[in-house]
Length: 286
Image (cartoon, rainbow, N blue to C red; front, side):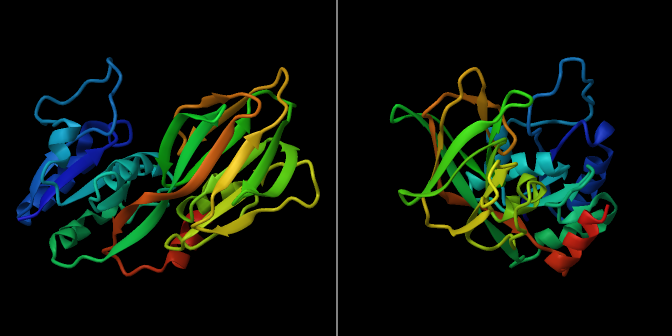
């Protein structure tokens, strides 16, 4: 019997109708299921009394795989949780884009495939991000998508210097920079003019945001590079670091953001014989 943790976004699955249907299908197929929320809900949100929600620790104890219900943000958050525990996951899109999802909400009948032996998985690299101030690490985290440094003021620019393995690669004034994984290449990075990189590749993508320099372009680096982004003059301006769209960390002049390949990786379950390129065309034509 496989033990499956279901992780729904209650704001994307109102009344947990999709989660209920998925749980019924999995249990009828012989799975043992638990339900866990990926984050705390607002106090005014009414939780159903007939569903039992377990803690995060209990949800992952003895878990064989995880199924997440939500949009890309929810799936991204859940992927980082399972990446720290080396548990394979599958995303079900109940949001808008759902680029990272394997299934749409009308494809729940395919869920029993995750209970089969030797289900294929697709490994996605992560990046480790450390923010240093005066040589001391102030903040660090792992990202499946990207680390983003952006300006805080309208009509202002920030000065950034990017070095790869201690050699300066670019220096510019602009709106910021995106340092992405191949998975994150189709998120903020591509919107800023960066390349699309196959998600199973091992690369670090560096994409400037609105650089005030004609010769500054995106870089696609090997995964074993160390990328250091140093914040230059700020003055009365402000700059912020956000990892995978999380809490914004305020940066000061001379702060450094050090990005390397993480030791962790995320394994996504693949139960459909769908080409990455067909998904790319379908999602980006919406």
